[in-house]
Every structure is written in structure tokens, then in C-alpha cells.
Image (cartoon, rainbow over all chains, first blue to last red):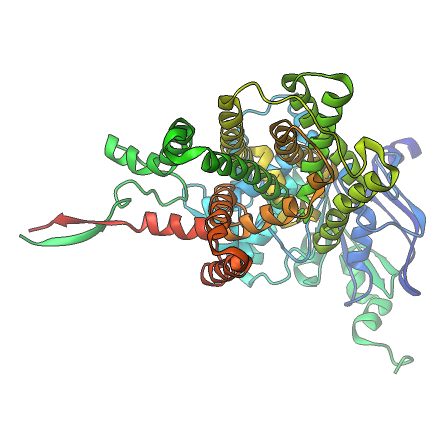
Amino acid sequence: MLDRMQDKTLLKVELLNKNFGGVAAIVRVSFSLQEGELLGIIGPNGSGKTTLVNLLTGFVKPDSGKVIYQGRDITGKMPYKIAELGIARTFQMVKPFYQLSAFKNLIIPLYSSRVKKLKGGKYGDRDDVAIDLLEDVGFERDSFVPYKVSSSLPHGYLKRLELARCLALRPDLLILDELFSGMSMSEVASTLPIIERLNSEGLSIIMVEHRLKELFRIAHRVIALNFGSKIADGPPRDMMESEAVKAAYLGSEEEG
Amino acid sequence: MKFRRERLDRGIKARCEDIFALSSYREMLYLSLPRVLPVLILLILPLLKGVIGLYWEKVLMITCTIALLALSWDLMASVGLISLGQALFFGAGAYITGFLNHAFKLPPIVTIPLGTLGGAFFCTLLLLPVLRLRGVYFAIVTLTLPLLLARFIETTKILGGTEGMSALSPLPNIWVEMYVPVFAMLICLFGFRRLINEDYGLVLQGIRDNDRAVMSGAINIYSFKAQAVFIAGVAGAFAGAFMTHYNQVVGMAAFAMDYSILPLTAAVLGGVGTFAGPTIGAFILIPLSEVLRAVGTLRVVFYSAILIICVVGLPEGVFHYLRRKYHQLERMVDVG
């Protein structure tokens, strides 16, 4: 029983610490993620959510602590090595390859050795795969949108392009850093089912999100951060009632 | 009879950039002329040496080598590596070629390829530790490296010291002297243009636009940057290797600032990021500087003034301007 439980652990974070010049960004954060789980990470501004994502994906090296992914230690590895192992991430600030058309943006991850390996050496035409991927995230296939220069696309499309860029890697773990920020209500409404579908197909997802209502609807479990520390961990409905979470968002009486 | 103006490319332009629907030889000519005509002119010019004179043939050859350096600069810029030291490539290629010929008496047919590849390899190794740097930080390092190597040769007196190595083998004949740089430049120009639009080139462009996104796409950006530096190094080192045998001497001048600044100015004047732009830039700058010899000591003043006017007037670069104007050409059509 215990063995089977351990087998299903995809990611295990142990006592992660990170200081930026004396400011504690992440303090002794530990958690684990089961395969197929959709984990939400919430917290007020500056609580260390994005730093945690950067630590997991190698863009920032931790001062201490461990990140174990699929049973191997990936702490402090280079970002491209971590991506090669199947952890794909979106960036909070979308910055596509502006001079390339939308579908050409996806050629870049499709060129990686990970995709080559998964496809057994031959890939066929990357352009076709790119168009398919864009269709998956809700680009209209027969329109001009996939062929447009990405600098001319509206923000909602750029966010979904960012999602498609991750899916191109055929990841085992998808980390979304505030995917919904800056999206309109209707854009969120059309993106939410895409994430639910990916998760139901077996993809493990970590979602850092400020839109709690939408997140709580699809997340299996939620972690709350405040001042870099984990203050709550549990199913979404517990978050609504947790005093610690309420205090973090609204400020508690003791702190004044 | 009524007439209406119509753009020449009206019938062939699809809604997507760079895709055309051609249905006649005239339309094909419209698209191929700007590419074919300059190539034909370049191939014919050396044949006219009786008409234009050996002096201008030599100018053509030097222009081609500077164009090679400008192309190599533009390739590095395509990966986001702004270089202020193309002289590093030129000098490395020149010295390796010169040394092989001077010490081992190898013929140019062996020394030039070895100097080209060796120079590119040496420069890539030298730049490997600084590929992590971006923008102005990388630029400063490239600026200092050729100066450093020149002083190193001067003080240690290796490779001929300040005098350099002279009495090197000449090139076999005048046709080799004139056609080799022309062909090398054309191969680099069209090869680089092709390369940058391949999937491989898209990765390079991606690194320039947003290297973090490329990294998170499981791509080792430092390996790609190193490959780009090597390819750019081949173009630059070849220019140096060739000039060594043309001049039959190699000295510290191979690391001169000219070889860093001229390619950069050519690229800025012609239009960065297009490869055709830097080539056109070189074909404006070098002949212009020769024409201005007639005005004597004021040459640099005129030269600089023309350069400033061009850069201020056409900040996008000559090539972008010409391309836009060409696509805006109109004809009169009978609508009555």
C-alpha cells in the first residue's frame, strides 16, 4: 500500500529555502504532488508564488532544500534540463517571439531533443504539429489567426499561445504561472475547460492563480503561501474557511 | 479610355507574408529580379576588368570581404549577440592561415580552409565563457578581445611580433583572386537567409527575442549560441584567411579596429537582421570611401556626414526602404 502511494508521487518538494539579499522569499516549503493531480497555489502579492515556480523549474537556484521529480533529484539543474525531463511552465508576463507568426512560435519547443526522443527520431512536418497544438488551445484552425505575427495577437491569444508552447513538449507536469491574469471573463471561461480536459487526460498540473473562484472549481488541492511560508494545504473548500488564509488576504487583527 | 493605378504585386500577394501566388513568367520575374540582378552584376563585374580597371576590381574584392564580415555580424545579431569585434574572426583566420603557410609551407588551397575552420573554432572557444552575457556586456568583451590578442602578439613577439609574417604564397591567378570572394559572399548571403528561416534558424531568432522561453522549451541556448558563433566565425575567418594570401603578408593590422567597425556600420546602414541589408551596406560604404579619396584630407568628414544623413534619414536601413518601395511599384491599368 505504502509502495503504491510512493509510486504515484510525481513531485516532492522538501524544505525549500530561498533568500534574496536578506529577504526570505521562500521559507521551508514542503509539499508533494500526485500523478494526475491538479494542485493550486494561492497567496497574496509577494508571497513567493512565482519564486516557487522559478525554483521548481531551475530559473532560480534554492539556498537549501530539495526538489524530487519522478524519483530523481532535480534541485538546481539547468532550466532546459528540467524541461527536458517533462516539466513545462508558462510565464506570468507573456513574451512571445514577437517577430514570428503564432504557429512558428511552437517550432522552437518542437525542435528540442525531448520531442525528438518522444517521436522516435523523426517528426514529420513541425508546422502541421504546431497548427494542431494551436487548435488544441482554441485557435481557430481555418482562420488567419495561427499565421498572424504574434505581436499583433490580443492578450488572451498570447496566453493560450504560451499554454500551447508548453504542450508542445508533451509534458508530464505542467506549471501555469497566473495563466488567467489579464484575461477577460469570456477568455477565462473558454480556457478553463481546456485545462480541465488536459487534467482529465492524465496531465499533472500546478496552477499558480489569483482568480480563486475559477481555481477552486477545478483544483483537487490547494496550497496557500504567505511571506514565503506554507500556511494551508488542503481541498479548496477548506481554504474558504481557513482563518490563516483569510488573515493573509485580508490582514489579521493582531497585525493591525 | 480610363486608367487606374494598380500595384505590381496586387495579383500575386497572398494575405500571408512571403507567400506569393504566381501565374506567369512576368510575375515570376517581378519576384526574382531583385535577387537575380545583383548576382548577375557581381558575376559579370570581374570579367570587365579591362573596362573598370584593376584598382576598382580590388575595391570589389575588399567590399566582398567586408560584406562577409557584415554577414557574420548579422548572423550573431540574429541570436541576440551584438558584436563589436568582428576583427577577432578576421584576425584569427588571417593568423592561422599565415602561420600554416609561413611555418609549414602549405599551399593556399590547404591553408585557407584550415584557417577558416581553425579560426572559427578558436573564436568559438574564446567566446564560450561569455555566451551567457547579453547586450552591451557581450559587446564590450568582443570589443576588447581583438585588441588583447594584438597586444599579446606584440609583447610576446610570437607569430612575427610587430612585423608579422611576410613573403607568403600568392594566390594562383587573378580569377581566383576576384571570384573566390564574390562566390563566398553570395554563398553566405543566400545560405544565411535560408538558414534563419529553417526550423533551426527559428530557434536562433527565439533566443534573441526571449531566451527564457526558449530555455523552458527544453533547448540548451548556450549550445545554439555557440553553434551560431561558429557559423558566423567561418564567414569572418574566411575573409581573414583569404586576405592573408591576397596580401601575401599577415600582421597585427589583421586585428585592426576597421574590421570591427566597418561591418557594424554596414549592417546598421543597410538594415539589421536581413543579411541582404548588411551586404548592401558594405557595397555602399567601401566604394564610397574610395570615391571620396578624391577630396583628400576632408574625406573622413564627407564620409561621416553621408553616413549620419543615411542613418538619420533611413533609420530602418537602406534595404528595408528599397524593399518597401519595390513592393509599392505601380502600373497603369485600362479600366475603361
